[in-house]
Image (cartoon, rainbow, N blue to C red; front, side, top):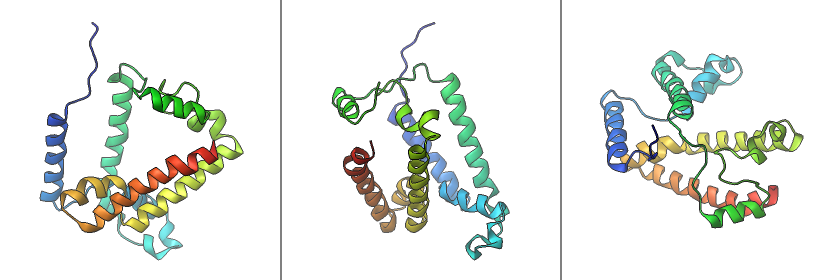
Length: 185
């Protein structure tokens, strides 16, 4: 049976996100993924080396389960709920990416020029992912949370630090896209 795939409309997903945020607020929890990295470091024994990681990570078990559920949900979505792996992007974007050296832009979610096994296993690819990971980790720690925590929860709570962080995330994304990405590729 053929069907036309449509993403869930905003009037369904918006209230679902609101409902989840309400439940978290009701139970005294905060949404965010970067706090899980702190918990994983504490589980891994980093508290023996860095005092920041000396805390009772068992209090964050619910958040770790959230990440496991996110990974499982992403797998289910990709495996069984995604009828097509192509990405609908504008012809202008395809042209811009082609000029940067990205072949077949939009043919799949993760371009081989960044995420292909040959690229990741090369010295340049490994270095790019290492530096990117360090910058994202530093940025999330410096901002006091990740993009999801600030953009969904912080802005919902009308928190000025979250607004500043989200503006910073967007500025950083624009700088990366228009200045550094062309220099790297």
